[in-house]
Image (cartoon, rainbow, N blue to C red; front, side, top):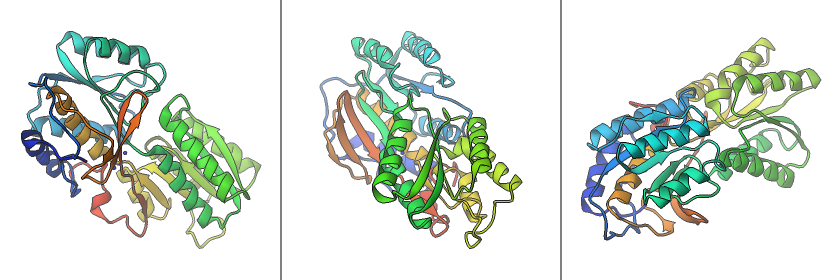
Length: 351
């Protein structure tokens, strides 16, 4: 959803259209703290889609497509690395060979991408990393939400709903990804500190729905499960709902058998599940803002602009990281109380 600065003249005006086209969010397209550089003049943008097996990433791809069209950006045909770091490296080489002067990517293996980033840096090609923060290798800007906040919000929601006791199954993402690590560490730390009487079954899934379902089946066979934390609703929602339905555990929160579920993503299917009483909450990643600001920073990089850490004018915060800067976009908790708020529909293209 994850959601800043004063844009200088033309860049700010051009990006305003992206918000209107993408969604009903009321954030400004500009960012404070931006300054002009000596370079600039535009160029081609190369964009690699990380995967197409997730509703979240498919939403992101549609926002990218509309953003390119609405802003008449000079973008090369997009590639898809299909969650494969080797394909990502090859795709980037191809984009550079086609004349890309800036690259937008979302590396799923945040450690292995370092050599690709080093190569791009040697060619003075700026990189905008979306959703994930590379462990090493220079980046112009990382565009992602605060993933530790995902884990903390999920922890507090479940901890309060369970009154500090019970058993929770956590579907961990791929721990080779900074997102999986951030969410898992934050959730675990919060549970230990604030809800020590809740037993957490942290299950590694590598973002695979079938793996999560099998591990949930094992947990249910071993005893009562009171809560579930799904780190990615886009892959975990459907198999989880199917299994709980099979076990006759899709019951209202007033029923003692109710399994409280909090997810991450904020896709339309999750909102529908909240309305139907099948899950209880999700932390909504701003796919629309990921796309919007990925394109914004790519253009800014080509125009020679630089940015500084600090609060932004679109409700986010730029922080320094060892290998560049990160724009941490907001990601709100969505429950039955606010699920009809259209400003939270970051992953519903056309809404």
